[in-house]
Structures are given as structure tokens and as C-alpha cells.
Image (cartoon, rainbow, N blue to C red; front, side, top):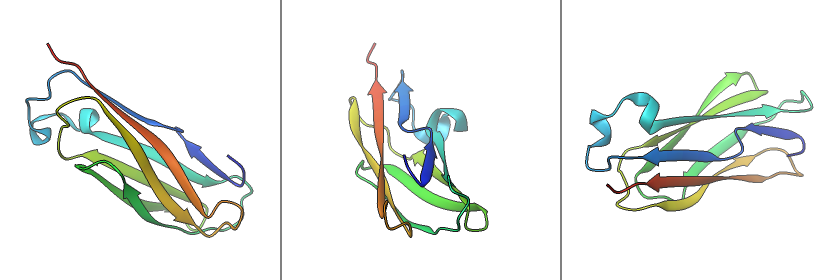
Length: 110
């Protein structure tokens, strides 16, 4: 992506039983992690994570001082049908002041 690398470049969930509450699901089914890293090795800051999807909570966790962060996305509410949106965050890198990561939540109905 440039001076900042994001891995993975999209978040994807595949929900086969949306009737179960997220609290009853294993963490692996409701949690996704994105690693945000300075590709150049220069210090950066990442802040203000947001999601366009209702029921998706996002938070940033610093991993390496100024060089790497982890964005944690947790589905707290299951959507009734397949939805897509974006997770975004701001950076201190002038060429990439805002980065957006696509989200897809596929809900399969029996």
C-alpha cells in the first residue's frame, strides 16, 4: 500500500448460524486482526479506528513503538444478512493520512 503495509488487506467473516449470539461463539469466529506496519521502518502513529458496520467494534493495540499496530475487529452483533463496509483509521504518514480496509460478512441461511 505504500509507506504503510496492512495485512490482511480485507476482513472476511463467514457466518453459518446467525441465530447464535456472538458471546456464544468461539473467539475465532467473531474476531479478526489486521497488522499495520511501517514499510519504511520510520516511526508513525495510527489512531481513530472506525467501522461503517453496526455491531463491529474496532480497537488499536500498539505492538512495536511507532512501527507496528494491531487493529482488532470484533463482531458484537450478527447481521441478519450479508453485509459489507469499511474499517478505517488515520495515520501520521502524509502520503497515507487515512487507510480503509474492506469488510465482508457473509451470512448463509439454511
